[in-house]
Image (spheres, rainbow, N blue to C red):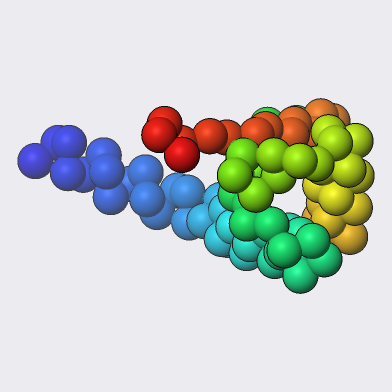
Length: 105
């Protein structure tokens, strides 16, 4: 009974502090960053972020290697920075650009 009560209390406290709304808003903005890159360059991306005490410490934009194999890193960095700058109100302390490959592709 005690763990269930603790879980319910935690959920209520998180809802009360706006954490759920903040996370939902950030997920929508991450999707908007991905869409901006897709619309501008045609690349599928995934976007992640870290928030620490209301501060956006970093944003990670992951590109698929099969789509960006021939591109220069500076172009990928510019595309990510432009999309993040236009979409997010908070500016990240660090922008991480990753190129992800799937084994066997």
